[in-house]
Image (cartoon, rainbow, N blue to C red; front, side, top):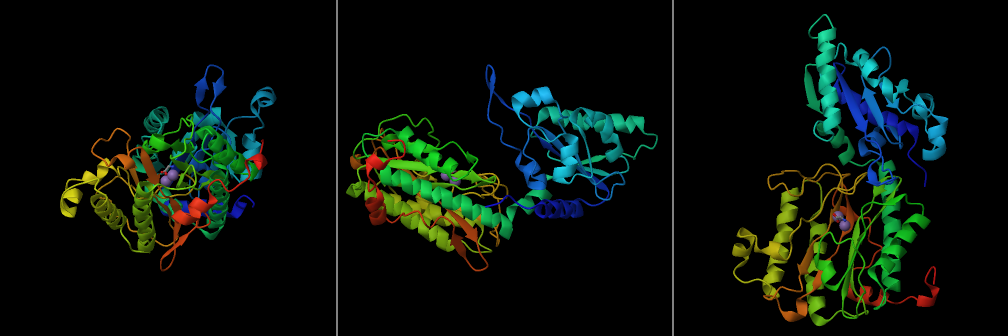
Length: 448
Ligand code: GLY
Ligand code: MN
Ligand code: MN
């Protein structure tokens, strides 16, 4: 699977420039390295917006888009070449590489940005930018606008308005092209295989991190650059902690293991959760909880189609899970009361899903915004991931359900008339899951 061809990036920039108009300039900023501890940095993950518009993967870049500008409408500012630095930190394209390999009309060393920017601000009314994500850069942008205004003789020869770039750029990122979907299918496929591998090799007595290792081993072996987020492997009560990433506990017979992990392939994320019995068989209470989540998950996937409101999808899922919580004896009252009082939050405290793309929580749907009227559209990819979590210390819950967390998550493409499940290759029917768990010979374990 290849990375996206140059024309894809050209088309994305052309479309964005068309949207901002030729009285505007857009500034897109890719951050630098992030410090981890003492002498070490976190591994660099390129800025999603810079990646989306240019394919550029190095730390620190500033991209200008200035439709129709005489000196170039696509301009990059990148760190200058420095052989000594590169010997330590890796190869850099430098301004020459930005022009040659990324198609910039003009490129400069990053330290020339403050001197050069005036030429691209001049004569533009609006500056499109993502205010609020980088305080230091925000101040720099405001400083440019003030200082260039003072420097220029005509008061209106630099932008007077900052406009949020997100509305236009994220509208583009929201709907996936065929080329993007090809990468997303690949990312989904690698992730399906990794989950299947973990289920096959799971045995009570293993540690959560061993399953994490198997999953991430498979991601890397298949060419994915990263996990798209910190992998969650939680056994027993750990599965009831939504963002559990310690992954240090021993997996016991009788535990349900919840794995939420996805790879990032060519910077497109997948995001799958499966929950399965460590010993290969659900207890009746675990199976009841599992079935409740599964039926809500399958019904939500059936709901997915163009025009379906995100709120509706969310509310339908709340309703189905709330009914199950009443049927299972986890909640009391009427369905309307449970929904009205949001009692379901005790066991289902998150949303039904989120957009997926270059980011695992991608642009476009705002899952926690109660008033978001967003409707699904063909070409969107989203996760469907209901769950039920009964903490071990919940004395109001039936004892046999305590310490059980179940989430089932698939990645779904909105098609012309419904949905396509991109992660269908990962079993989720309880009988199929039980059959898969522990089915591999532990002596064949990679590294055994
Ligand atoms: N893994 C993060 C999520 O499911 O949203
Ligand atoms: Mn998710
Ligand atoms: Mn997930």
